[in-house]
Image 1 (tube, rainbow, N blue to C red):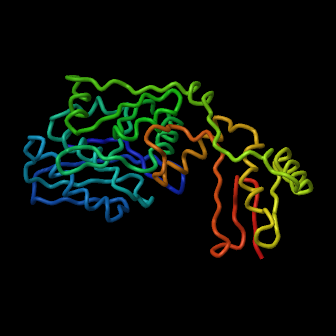
Image 2 (tube, rainbow, N blue to C red):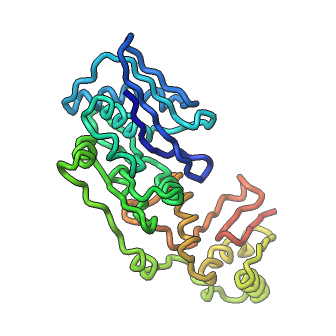
Image 3 (tube, rainbow, N blue to C red):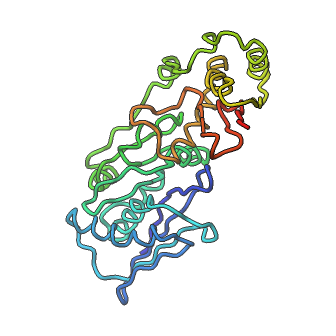
Length: 293
């Protein structure tokens, strides 16, 4: 029997749709994953088998073939565990495959069936929604960042049992919602204030022009002349982030796995201050460079 489950992978900072095709048939017991999977995907065999066993279902000794389509795209990450498990359960007639067609499903499984947090959930949900998929089953710990995708229904789950019950309609998972307008309006800036700088009139004038025109600015001078001090304060005179700008910044934070649990959307402009001993030029504030010579 063949079942298909929609999931996502990452290519750079963009999501990419993957159709997971699972075939469970009679024959010599085996488990094959095709479609350019990486090591973490190949290791899903042990996680998925243990998860299904530990939630009380018997996984018979069958020939299992899993195809990650399209087959010519390299797939990485452990977030195919949950869709693979659901595909197998569909083939075993434990859940209904027809009810999975409207969902994109992403999640890593523990051996006890619990669903772990993953990195990069936001760009994956953005791409899924762009492709017309309006429902997503994701790890509970990723609910906040995924819910910023307007128009998409997010169903966060902590355990494989919850997902099975939701698909079988025996116990529904409530969609998770956040108030985006409230998040954007409660923008508590944490920047150092540009107005607190005394003197440095020519540098301040140059930075004001750079900020107002959206230009780059390179600060060059001896150590202690005030380059980093001025650069740290530049974001305080930049305009507030638009929603689309916040979304792009949050995508990068999502892939890096550094979004705070209670912060679904990054609304402050990022500032980076690498030490001069590791980089000749340091990008700060998205618009300014500081260099020590």
